[in-house]
Amino acid sequence: MAFHVEGLIAIIVFYLLILMVGIWAAWKTKNSGSSEERSEAIIVGGRDIGLLVGGFTMTATWVGGGYINGTAEAVYVPGYGLAWAQAPIGYSLSLILGGLFFAKPMRSKGYVTMLDPFQQLYGKRMGGLIFIPALMGEMFWAAAIFSALGATISVIIDININISVIVSALIAILYTLVGGLYSVAYTDVVQLFCIFLGLWISLPFAMSHDAVADIGFTAVHKVFQEPWLGTLKSNEIYTWIDNFLLLMMGGIPWQAYFQRVLSSSSATYAQVLSFLAAFGCLVMALPSILIGAIGASTDWNKTTYGLPEPIERQEADMILPIVLQYLCPVYISFFGLGAVSAAVMSSADSSILSASSMFARNIYQLSFRQNASDREIVWVMRITVFLFGAAATAMALLAKSVYGLWYLSSDLVYIIIFPQLLCVLFIKGTNTYGAMMGYVLGLIFRITGGEPYLYLQPLILYPGYYRDEDGIYHQRFPFKTFAMSISFLTNISISYLAKYLFESGTLPPKLDFLDAVVARHSEENMDKTILVKNENIKLDELAPVKPRQSLTLSTTFTNKEALLDINSSPEGSSTEDNLQ
Image 1 (cartoon, helix red, strand yellow):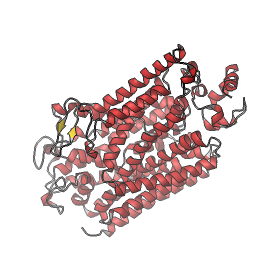
Image 2: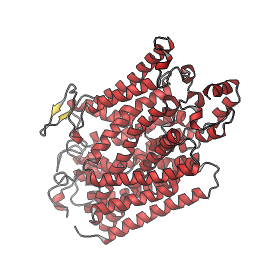
Image 3: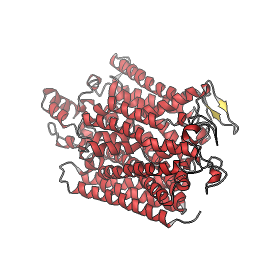
């Protein structure tokens, strides 16, 4: 394949546009005169993200390179087709569920990151444990996106894939470094517009190519390959349901999502943003579905791509850039591919910022340096943006199964974090003992179920398993949802058991080594409407404050109304005295 100067120019133009918007957003933030702390402005954007920008940035959280490339691939691959393209519906329902049930309680309590409620109810140790799968999910997601981006660019201009990955990652890291959430949000608007325009402009040209059959006919009839609508066999139903539930419910407990929820100006706005993003995800999936259908309806022998077909060359995951490259005129092809390449970063930057936000606030500040200045937290965030970005880039370049690792880590988000989030927000009476046991059992049941993508053999063979030609076992039983249910029920049952044993006197108070029942006044922990009485981080651990002095606390927890209510009440002063 020849080096394409026009393709290089298109990519440089789009990348410069993204970079300039990111730097402009950072400058706008710095000169806005906001009274918010700088670190909080970077994480939640001063909590004044409007409906338009908020809707775009929340949509772009999911609609990145993996989403558009993956949807096109699923529709194109023979034997799968549209029936297995679950991401558009799954993630849209995930955003609807998030808006209906999770956005309001999280935003109304004034949290700064997704990990705040875990640390306040379950303590610092549990918050640190929850951080591990959350970090893995964000990092592997960013690495998978960079990997897909490098492959896409190499199709356009035929340059070394490593160079394209490194340059793309550096640009994403640079504007995230200087502007935080504002830069990510405003570049998301541009990136989403680029994807939408680039793909829709390319579609008529691809559809009208001589080598492409009528996609309406190939949807249900075999022409060049199996119909692209796909089929769902009776023995695959449980696997399909398991994967769908993973997308729908496992798509909720991500810091990248809650960062947008917590940055909105009110709880109602947070809900509306979620519903707008759900609609946006569906709309943005349409061109990808059509491009996958075009790929399945093409006689590749009549194109310059030639034979063998993409599926036989192991290039099914590249079907979207291949269709744009070989079925569209040169100028349209480069516009579409350039726009898509620049836009692919729209999810990677969100993941890098999410990981650094959780580390800086929940690990560095709340666990180790409670007295850290705002300037110090900002610098920790900047350093970790660079480090996490570099790590994601290295994984994209070195790991051969980045997508496999991301599948596994997204499973852990669904199996471990989702049931814990349900308990911490909605189940009255759960504590650290239940959370820890639920975490461990969920992890054990997931790992022992195996992962074919990583050639990890299962230790537990559920009903309906089978063995492929490579000797790898596959599970048809919905064991991921089973493991999530085990984690959820274990958290509740062990929490109530521990509470009963300590409060009935069966176990002496000194055995409450996690300070989860006796020492934390479990009756107060039941009331989830009061922020300070809920938290399991001691007030004197957050900052060496004197009684009645809530200035330092108000900068650590942002629910100032709850703090004022407590400080103004007799119960508030006695609680502070007890905890000092």
